[in-house]
Image 1 (cartoon, rainbow, N blue to C red):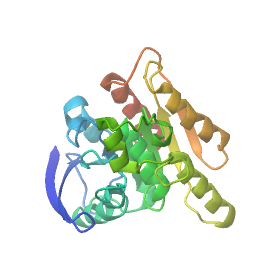
Image 2 (image 1 turned 120 degrees about the vertical axis):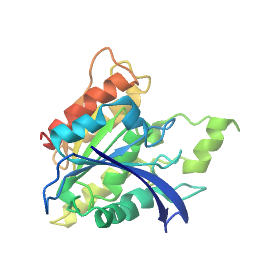
Image 3 (image 1 turned 180 degrees about the horizontal axis):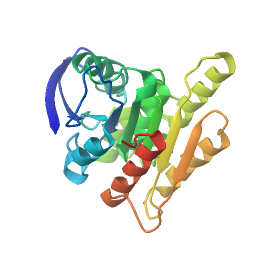
Length: 259
C-alpha cells in the first residue's frame, strides 16, 4: 500500500494545497496506471474518501491510482469572490501529478473524475470545462448549483452563495452544469475531434435534492447522442456514505477499471 500525502504550492492559488495519492502495492516498471480523481463533499475534505470507504483495498484490487485533492469549500470552481480552484483542479493539478508520478498516465483516456455531493457537481463541472484532460465522470448525488434555492436574505447560506457564484441567476454562466454541457455540444457540431465524455450519475431515491438530480438526468438523457450517459437511482438510500460506497464500485465498473 502507498498512501502519499502531499503539500504542494499552487501557482494558480498562490498558496499551499493538500493532496493525497493512493497507489496499488505492485506497480511494474514503465507501467502507466489509470487515474481516478476523487472529489470531496462540501462538509468534508480530501481525506473523507479514506475514512468512509475501503479505498486502499479498492485501489489494490482494481489496480489504479486515486488522487484526492482538497479545495476547501469552493465546490471546485473559480470562485466569484475568492480563489480559482476550478482552474487549479482542472488544469494545474493534473499536470503536477502527472509530472510527479511517472507511474500515473497523463493520457486523457486514462483519467477519470468522480465526486460526491458538492464534489459530484464539481466533477461534472471540471470534466465539462476541461474535457481535454478527463474522459469519464462519476457524479454521485450531483445536482446543478444553478437549480439550488437562493434566498438572498443576508444569511450565511446567502453569503456563501454570493462568494462562490455571485448574486444573480447563474443558469447562463459557467457555474451551471447544463450551460457547460450545451457549450460542449456546440463544439461537437463544429469540431470533428472534440473530446467525448462518458458520464455515470447516481443518486439515492431518498436524497433531499433528488429533484435537482432529476433535472441533470433529464438533460443528459435528452442529449444521449452527444454523451454516453447512464443514471442509477438505488431505492432506500439518501445523501449518505452507504450510497456513495455502492456508486463508487458501480462507477469503476462503468469506467472499465476492473482489475
